Image 1: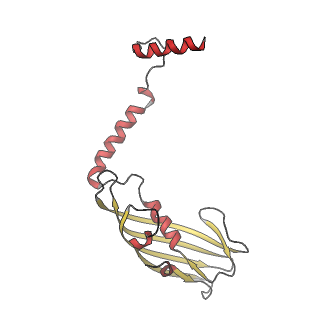
Image 2 (image 1 turned 90 degrees about the vertical axis):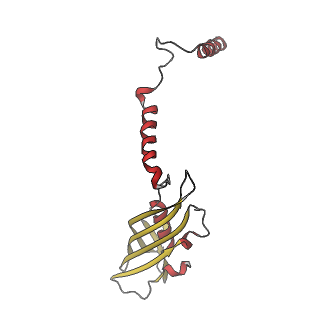
Image 3 (image 1 turned 120 degrees about the vertical axis):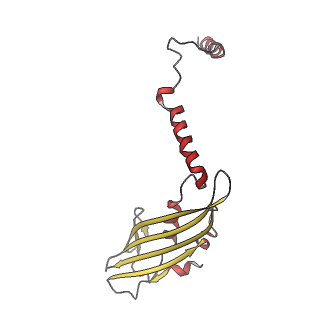
Length: 180
């Protein structure tokens, strides 16, 4: 799929609401550093509100991605449903103001929405990609990590009256002798 499949000729659109639909697959990720997407089947519905001064884009992206599990390197299917919006305001010099607001040249005749779609899909992919059979185990690991690293279980500081491992005591003596 070429990026041109996501082109919208805005110069011929009237100042009103317009609806567009796109279909994307794994070629959306080709040529990018994101390699964990093996396959993709995405439906993109875009509602574009055009006015004299701006374009208001409402994205609704649904579908599934085949990802590689971080633990087993097995492929698994991950469903996504994303609703996002962007505002592209017409101006003299193109500039990104915020994640949701961008200024585009007044003379722009065609816009391409492949980059925002790509970014929205990437944001819908979990940081920790686990095959569904590992997800319950991952929840258990998170609980254990929380218990291990909670403030209630931190080791006593050396200033408190508690037994100290002799190896640490020897290191503390060495440190104190060097500081004197």
